[in-house]
Length: 121
Image (tube, rainbow, N blue to C red; front, side):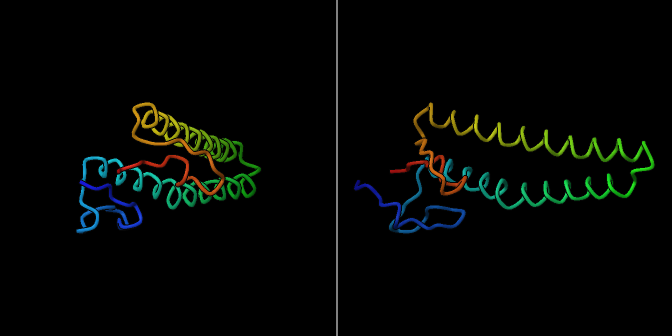
């Protein structure tokens, strides 16, 4: 069976299923990686930004009320801790996939979706 060029495979969520790019077990990990990248890039950052803005507005508007200030501080703290946990777990999963030989660790500054490249050839 000849090696399949990654350029022949679709670039959407499902990276296989065409006559030029038949599905393999490895493509399950590619789909999983693409879902994680989508969630991290397109959902986590906007939600975290919105929560930080809301916490800042609460902190500014309710400066006289100590209970509301504590609530704003806890919102900001929880958002920052959540971001640290999310990205730490992303790093651990990526390093695990590299350790078992499923992914290549290519540290580049082109974006988070290019750090761990899963090779399905």
